[in-house]
Length: 595
Ligand SMILES: [Zn+2]
Image 1 (cartoon, protein in one colour):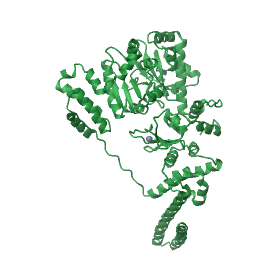
Image 2: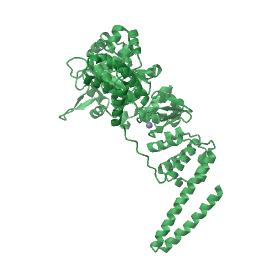
Image 3: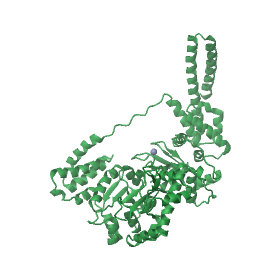
Image 4: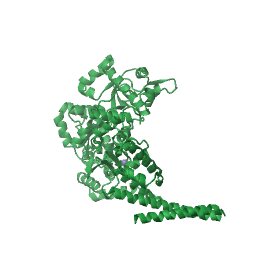
């Protein structure tokens, strides 16, 4: 870990940033006993196995094994470097850090990408406010789209000028190379290899921010009808994973959590209009296909999603595409049906926020939405078209893992379309047969499972009560650990303890850089020990481990003696037999001691 800041400061920053509070900015945590549970952000799941311990100030996922402290979380979840995680938490707690800049040659891959995005964001903002062309766009935003300066500033809108190399040239003055910009998705290499050009040109720019407010990508909206693509977005980069990011979520998370539902819109402009109109629990899928990962992302903050799309065919199609994903994430969802020729932005400006609120509150269920948008109406459709409409709904229902939810959804459809529930259900059964997943492979158990389990338990006890580390020095040696990862952790713990007697598990995790080691530590620290007498438990486990090791050694010696005799090496056989005698003596004294 880079020692840019003194150790005590890093500890202090961690201590004033409660893990439950910090993680609540990213996850929906529910109190369960002494701990908090959430859906794991690191793997796909529908029932929460991600546990956060306020007393230990660590997290652990029982599903995928990820674990760590506030720093590790930010590093893994937000792709921050350690230094950036420290900076973020310091800022969050209002702690002033000594001013230090990371020299370019020491920046990590991620830091360099963040830097490139930051440079681009500032460049685009400056172009919007300080150039003639930019000011025209600004005027359009204010007068034609009704955006306030406050909104424009908060969302850090910018303008990409009508030129091929302005950003490239500007970046070079800050020692960013063309390759840096290509990696950040900001420049494109010419096909004939003769150089590079700016990806974003003559466009209104929407920075896409991660949860810590840093730009990781950009959306560019065309400013004239001549431009072929209405939207151009950054490609995926090491920072930007399209299916994990929703535009605006960094701002709307607290509002979504508070209001307990998410408004889902398509465009950047729709989002800004709603935000400014007081609807701040809103996210936009802008320019990317909405996926189940997106749905799971919003399900972490609220149980309900309201789709608010344009009233045209494209908007209806978008709602149809989103529905299966929302169902798969076990969200309750509805779709607002705007009057024809309206989009969220125009509706809000023409009718005002009260009407919009009414529309949202009275949003029909998804089956009702489908029924209402059918042209010609359902009753006038051919039998085949009717079947297609209903099968689409059955397919949406099939995405849920809950049979109750599936039935409730179909019941709604059955009432609205006036079709027997049983017909829908038998179609559902047929469909489910087809998509039924194969059962999970059974976890293979290793032959050393018992020893392994004891070693992990020993680690768990030592983590629970670090005062036992001194006792451990007397009762076991590091070679008693056959598990190399646990052995390394044990050595590290002894070393750290000698330096810092008040070490806790979070401190320990700060000094572990190997992800497998942190995984094992967080797993161990979440184990149920079943007793508060940790000292006794430790002695018991240590004895069992020693006995197991002796037994294994004994078995090995016996087979070695046999092969030595077979090979006629009597001297070797004799030596081994002596060793075996010695071992057996130790073995029985061990038994006596503990019985
Ligand atoms: Zn997980």
